[in-house]
Image (cartoon, rainbow, N blue to C red; front, side, top):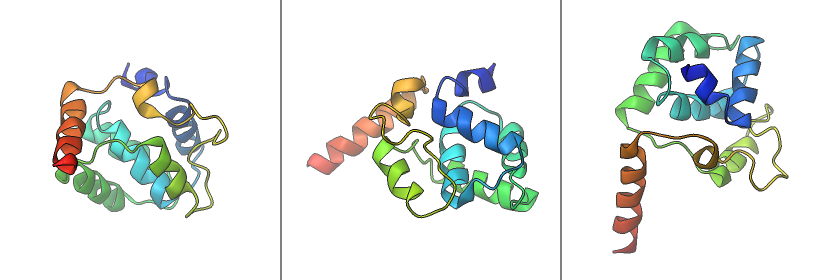
Length: 127
């Protein structure tokens, strides 16, 4: 069910397919995947998926998961994904010319605390 939920986002479906094919999705691709997927997959499932990247070990996957979880990273905005994509070969966003593409907040429903965290961040930034 959780994988099906992630596939509602074309970008996440693209990353899942690339990982299933054993492709190297790059540092930022793995980071984006972890930042989004941690809200839909168990720790075990997320780590197993990251290990499908041919250049990423079990230890690397566990470490990335712990970093993202420990710092409670919010899923990245579309602009950040496109910015990160410029820094690697693998295209994180399969359709960057579409202004609606790669906006996980449009495509996916996150737990309420994600939206609350974002709201608090913007309130602090304004004061």
